[in-house]
Structures are given as C-alpha cells and as structure tokens.
Image (cartoon, rainbow, N blue to C red; front, top):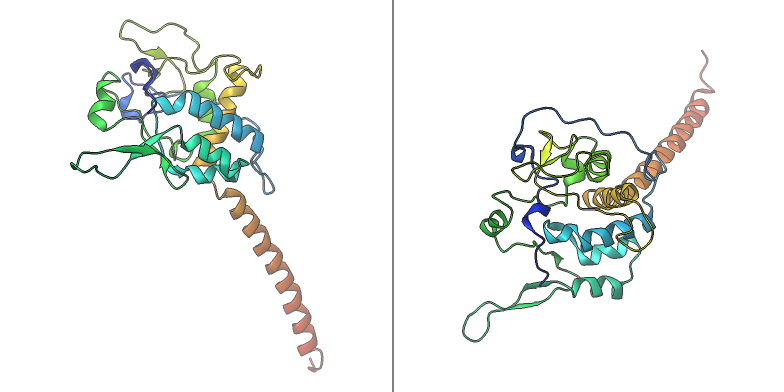
Length: 248
C-alpha cells in the first residue's frame, strides 16, 4: 500500500474549523473553465492531468471515497488503464484461515481507499489535524473550482516558509493559515506545466469528482427545453385550428 506523505503535507483543504487563526479568506479570482455555460463540457485532457496529480501527490493524505476506479473510464481512460491504477492500491480482503485480516489489490468496483486506517492514525500523522476526503470538496466550498485553484497556486502560498508552529500563510484558506506545505511544483508531471496550470488541472479533476454527471444533466436539460419549445408550437397550432371555426 502507498505510504503517507509527511504530516506537513496534510490539511490543505480541511474544514474551516481546522484553521488556527481567525479572519476572512480572500476571494479567489474568477477563471475560465471548459464546463462554463450551457454547452460547456469537461476537458478530458485536463481531467487526466488532474488525475495524475491526484495519484502522485494528493492521494497520500486525502481520500476520494465517492469515486470508484471504474468511473475513471468516464474521463477517457480505458478499462485496462483504470484497472492498472486500481492495482496500485490495496483494500481489505477476506479473513484468512485464522480469522486474521488480509489485503488484496483493488479492482474496478472499489472506491479510492482512504490513505489512513482510521481517524486516530490520520490525526497522529498530521499533528492532530484530519485531512478531509476530497470527493465533494468542489461543492463543499463556495465557488469551489476557483477556490481550489487559487488555494494551490503560487499566489496562494505567497509567504514562502512556515511560521514557528509549522503553519503556512495562505490567504485563500479559512483563517489564513494551513498546515500543508505547497503541494505542487513546476513540471511535476514532466510536461513543463507551471504550478498555476497544475492547480487548475487538479481543481478541474476535483470538480468532475464532485459532479461527474454534470454533462448528462446539461444534455437532459437542453433536450427538455427543446421538447417544451416543440410542444408549445404544437399546442399553438392546435389552438388555432380548434378555434378557427368559432365565430368570435
């Protein structure tokens, strides 16, 4: 099973109550996203880059319990690719002949496993903090996509080194301080991307994770609107025909 990153890498996106200083967070800048608007859709290339960043870095401290490995086929991965990613993780298996717990490689129907065995271990490895599951983080925060991108970008970590207590200044985090060190760096995937681009990629991936059915919802909504327009036209024609012979 994958081991955990140092404790300083936790809590970037934890609940407001975990912030150790009071104060309002800065409002993130508004970015242009591929899914904006009525006809907007997810950029599959961006989602796959975000997935790679998640499995390289974020998964060491955060879970993604509402996304199963088979869901990765929805962002353009083949079943074999999704299974290869699943095989990198271990999940609980059947007890052995002595009743002791066992582990086995994850399969497509399994969700992303939590990196910690329990809450006590999570807090022990993160200075008492509890890294949140990221499945719904993009919807749990106001303006979630822009919030995540701003939080993880260079402007977010604009103070550099941590203070005496090991906290990092980040104006976008509730309270202004976070226990997580800057998790991204330039060219972390070997593609020449900047931290700013990587922050947008992981924000896009977490937006999809929070609402994987968004494109289906938009498509259904458009079909309903077109149907109602056609029905309105049909009813108007029927009305004219029915009342045409009535002497007004």
